[in-house]
Length: 293
Image 1 (cartoon, one colour):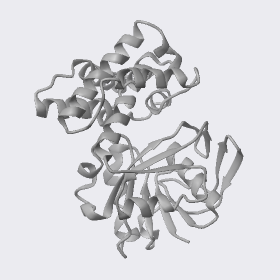
Image 2: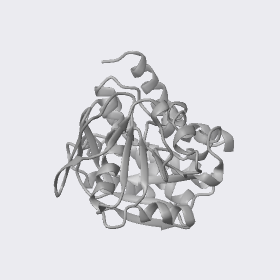
Image 3: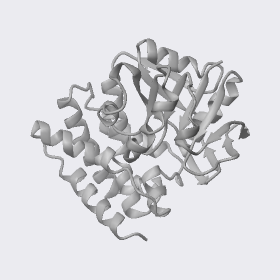
Image 4: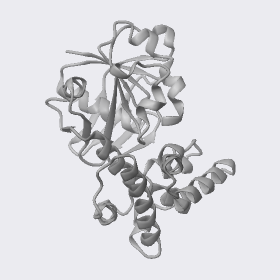
């Protein structure tokens, strides 16, 4: 049994909690800003009610064996406030967030050797403060190293597909190529079906192509087929699927476009590679954030 603290219990945190509970092996604790006495996760197999402790103040934090950060990328400082209490005995920290800057984001608070970036592919939506809907299977990818394998072992017996990879950099950039397209959903206020038709498909393809070019400059191994792979992936999603950028905009919450499209622009500038469509997406979403619906 492992003592596991989940910092940030939105859609992703809720899905991870459900998977961990189904193993029947762990003691879970939610670290949240406001009380969450009960969490209901609707899965393809049925409804789960998550049984856990809930801490709402960092002063309550006690040592655990693992910390999982599932907050939004812009809340790194708030997440890190939990670490002194949770990690007093050296607990590793798994960062389950978007983008390719996991280590850079938490470098001020976690020693690199104690930090584990995690890629998650998880069709999940937060329906309300205490309700999450998991629409399909969950894929977790980590570095093929001792901490990575130990993290995946936590999910043994669950329905999660766990993949250790020797080329985590490429896996992270592949996922970013998928995520940059979500800006179009947030801008159009429409679910995934909007990407199936021209001219939106062409714009999506260009966003992916820019991301892939920058990723290759960073050292990622991305094939020329990645544009088609990403577009085909979106065409396989349910027509009414809502990604987190769109969900956050509709709910009036802060959006994570900086960790997605913004990362492409930043890394591209470092290598002298222009990413005009991703730059435009950032500018438009910044404007949208300043003028909520």
